[in-house]
Length: 112
Length: 108
Image (cartoon, rainbow over all chains, first blue to last red; front, side):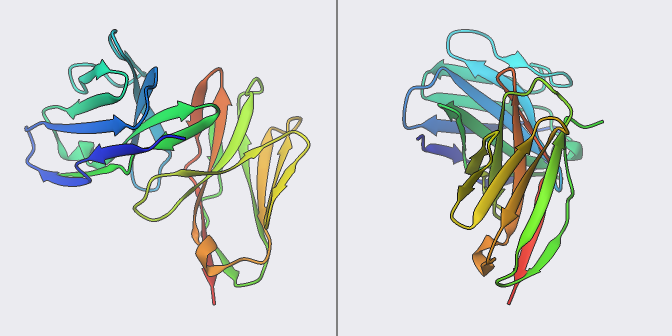
């Protein structure tokens, strides 16, 4: 199993600012995943973060908007840059151990 | 068309009753299937994997129908604590695809 500590748990931010979300895993993992979950919708993969290389972004997500760091095998950050109200969502980090996905507690972001 | 589709519900279920719901997936090459449970304002957690032969875990039974490309979840003897959103998750070539979830509300 894996235990992920994600913070902040929630934030209210002004449009145009940036927020960095952190995830710390209790074990070393090759890949970490960042998802967005909008109300009533499915989790959408933003990017996959590998240690030592640039993150791989899914269609519709770009590095300038969602820069990711992966300095080591237990930690990653996602930044939501130049925020607009459309970025209001829940952001989740995730790792896979065996076939099971484990998630951080989520960051509930509101942009005003 | 979405990769994974679920009836959003809510399914209002009297305590002790049985509820069942399905999830359809579009990629016939999908390799593995799961049901996750997500409580309000919490992260998703694995409920059970779904095997071709069908599998049971206590009051929960999961089935996979590859020919029709759907999986199902059945909850017997519903408890109040079963109230949650159930996410269908499909693994296609190493990438997880999530349904939007089926909300189940168990009432006294």
